[in-house]
Image 1 (cartoon, rainbow, N blue to C red):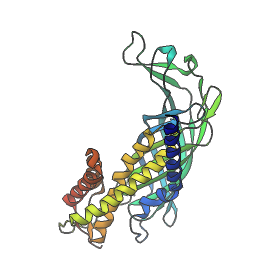
Image 2 (image 1 turned 180 degrees about the vertical axis):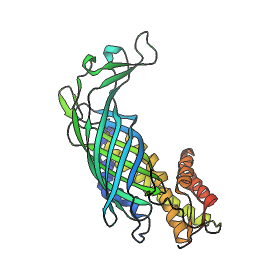
Image 3 (image 1 turned 30 degrees about the horizontal axis):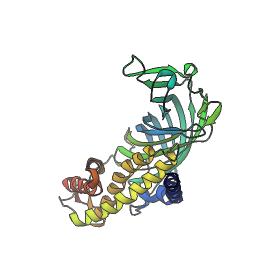
Image 4 (image 1 turned 120 degrees about the horizontal axis):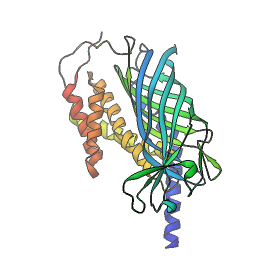
Length: 348
């Protein structure tokens, strides 16, 4: 039994090391998947966003990934060079982490919550009219924290305990925490969709006196305001046309696999410990349909077609509920949604 356990730990360590070795290609995978075009008119102005995913607080006292964790807020974006924009954002959200059993409360489950307001700045690089990658920093202002406890003797549901009053572990949130952010996504008219990764640089919370930094993986949706939103002028409408389904399925399946790997890599980086697979699985669940969407639209572009990215991603996401066959049902759902709205591209 000990040998089997040791072998499993060694295998997991080897797998995680291999995945981390692919993180750089994975981060640039999706934006590069779409063919480069002439430099587009870059976005400028205000937008609102909503991000939701899972977070963890790794360290000596590992706090596992938990969901939902994320933020909502407003942002201002402006170009400063060819294909480059800077973006400032103000948001409110929180860090949520699985704290494990709480014996003092006779509970087998507890979750740490750290609400925060953050100010951030980032630089985005647009590869064409839809895809971008970004990197930046933010400062999170944290004034309180509490622990949600499930169950307990004579108690049903969930109740909260302020961190200073929680006796199983000592929790203390840092007043200000600095974080690095990475992101990749695509825009469609006023809407944008992205995958956001955040890594703490300074301690987010002190657990039993030791500072630990939070990690966050989230999917984001954005809406742009005003007349300067890129893509608000609709392109000329071409004749109805559809892409060949076999080609779509081949491209979509490859995109699904690459997106799943990218999501696993990023999610693995967010995991609190070697036994925490929640964040990698969430990353794969978000990344796989995103990869499928990019691949099917790239294939359609090669056939002189265009379609609705939102509908295609919705079809890919719906296909993720196909159980063991999701690797096929997700590309199929994306292809069907793409063809339902696809048209010939018209050059202006």
